[in-house]
Structures are given as C-alpha cells and as structure tokens.
Image 1 (spheres, rainbow, N blue to C red):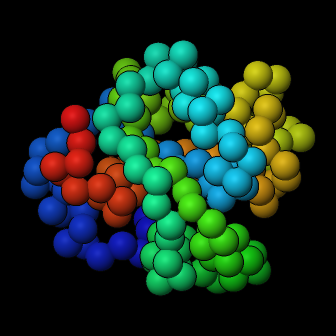
Image 2 (spheres, one colour):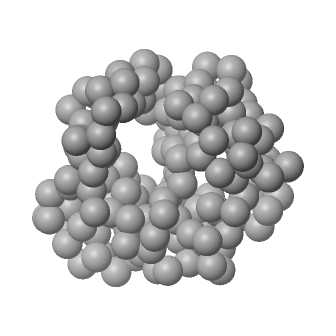
Length: 156
C-alpha cells in the first residue's frame, strides 16, 4: 500500500464512487514530452475504457515521494521521484469491466523490451525507467491512487 494518509482513502471510500470497474493511470513525463498523449489516449479508449476523470498536472517532489512511498527503500527511489517531477503528467481514472486487469494487459510489462506487441509500453516506452505509463496493480491501489489525484467532484 502507498504512503498516503488514511484519511485520503477513507474520504474517497465515503464518497462511494470507486468501483472495482475503475482503475487509475498516469501518462508519465516522457510520454507527455514526446507528444504521445493523443495516441495513448486513443489506444485506451479504443480498448473500451471510458475516461471518467483526467487532468494535466505536475507532481511536486513531496507528491512524488508520497505517491511512491512504497518504493522508498529501493535503490531507484530517488531517481524515480526526480523523473516523475521532471515534467507534466496526465492523471486519469478509467472505467471498464475488469478495469485493473484489462488495463495492466493493455499497458504491457514494465520493461518495454518484455512487453507484448501492440501494448502501450511496447509502442511508446523508451526504457524500463521511462516506460510511458503507470497503471494501478490492484483495485485497492486504484482507489488509493485515484483519491490521491482526484476529488469526488472531478469524476463523472
């Protein structure tokens, strides 16, 4: 679980908005910088996902540290925080039946060299560290990550 405050998730769950048919994604700074926003969003919607919330934003160092707190003890943590604050991101909540699992399949393996043909990471990622897109790995994390980036009134 992420290092988010417990109130963040409780507040989100109290709003009774998140369902198991939603997931969270971020188009990372490398994808935004290379102007891949349109092609990636097109692939996402063509795969049956509905965008229920989306915004272009930039993570502060504190935001990135909190979002990736689960990796704090890992050797790549500081580089990850630096990378994720290096430019704007697109944060989005997606809806589809079986959203988390289907989206993980759509984005492909973390390492684009291992990603299946046609996946987002195979098409748009430069490396394991600049892998274009984040996707929640569980329904619980989808709720937590969504609550981190969006209030209930920002979702449709």
